[in-house]
Length: 188
Image 1 (tube, rainbow, N blue to C red):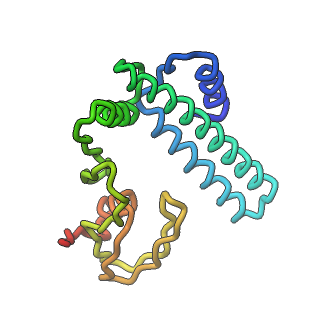
Image 2 (cartoon, rainbow, N blue to C red):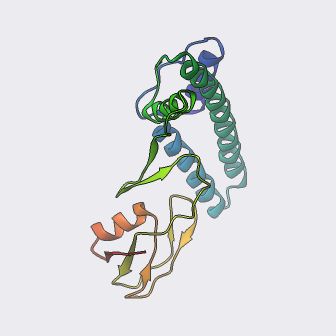
């Protein structure tokens, strides 16, 4: 995925009253594009390449703006389909939104949304105020480790041997695979 593909999809969505068909992993590909642009900008900054960093940051802003417009258009179309009771070409994430809208329109109990996580899934109910997520697992680091840049572009660490830490699942999985940490379950 790149900015050109996003632009083409935006043009298709603008020129059609129907939802355009998306690849099943469209939203994940977009998330990967954003992560890659952020990491490239960070890498350029660390190397002192200011112009290159500015180019990556400009691409990041363009990609985010294109995606906002695509999402707005698609959500408008999904609401229309929900009112009409017709299921169109939607990603799995969009189908969940459609089901919630249909339940709302039909005055039924709103279905739960599954918040997907790499390691686990939790249920949250739509309509309730957002609740701060209480971690259900932590990691005990068995070696001294330097700071790690996470997928959210935040720095985690440095860690001392036997530190118990709460980390994003992606970092935790890598530490487990390299046998430098083990997972512990936390109970509320």
